[in-house]
Image (cartoon, rainbow, N blue to C red; front, side):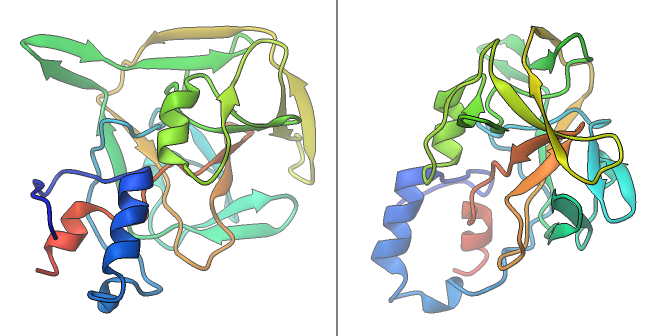
Length: 219
């Protein structure tokens, strides 16, 4: 495909967009309405949640680690849903570089248990924001992401799940991840996805459309 990658690499943002523009007429069968059926994605940029983070589905709240392909996930109350694809989005919470163990930090809001990595997009009254907007922007080149900070007002599902309420971000806490992996969601193309509710907060899908692993399977 013009560059050499290993099967575990993932291409994001402008590089992926340019590759598609350069190759869509040459390899047209790669660009169809189905996403690749990979088993796991372990991307160093991936913005994810702890395994026990609760996701709102048509069956009620389900831990993100238990979400399977085909699950209908609430995208906006009361009854707008998107469908999760068969992609498994996972990342080890600890990595080793230069013989040094690096453990992900998880963050929580307003005294709640930390549950999310810094690069995930949250929707606020003033637009998409993330604790680390640089990571979030790399994973979401199509939207403008700014820094999430104390004083911002987050959208959160109300108790009966019929609407969203606005919650002020009063405090941010963090801790080293105690889980072995963190998880994300990937939506099927054409579904009303890309946004969902994690622990009640309205969040965005952080994930590339095409992985190098799936492309290599075609050559």
